[in-house]
Image (cartoon, rainbow, N blue to C red; front, side, top):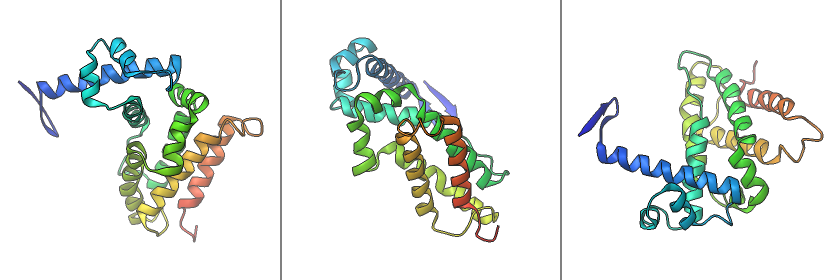
Amino acid sequence: MSQQTELGEISADDIAISSVEDQVLDAARSCILEYGVRRTTLAEIARRAKVSRPTVYRRWSDTRAVVSSLLTREIGAVMPRFDPAASARRQITSSVSAVADGIRIHPLFVKILRSDPEILATYILHRLGKSQSLIIDGLVPIIEGGQRDSSIRDGLPSHMATVLLLMVQSAVQSAEMVSGRIPGDDLVAEFAYAVDSYLRPLDR
């Protein structure tokens, strides 16, 4: 049995796999919020998800692999939708700021940043994760659209999207550090100004 969508057919098996993955990721989220990453085990995740250990082991090799999938899902959930008819620069400015703010106060990211910062350091210092690539790849066509409607300056869209990612990461990872000097809402407003200035055509 299958379900027809705009993207084609989704089989009952696909739906079942997706459901199990969400169960496991929900369980991992619960464990991490309670214990942190280092004290979370695949066995405990399987127990909370009410699935067998082999079900988890077949999909994820270790806890960090589960965390990577979980971060990708959680970031995907805060990614905005864009309206092709609206100003690309204005949408990127507000949306990137909203994403940065959403991640900054997200319970999972706050927990990991405080208890297991080395997990995030891997993706900040050494390599791009799937969720980071998701942000870059999502921004590229929007930047291209903004260049076509002249709301965004010239430049290589992939490079500009990558710099925007770095700006988001900086706002997220350093927000708590500077909270005594600038409150979160004010930081988001300044961040939005910085993003808009970065994208704005030079003659405006």
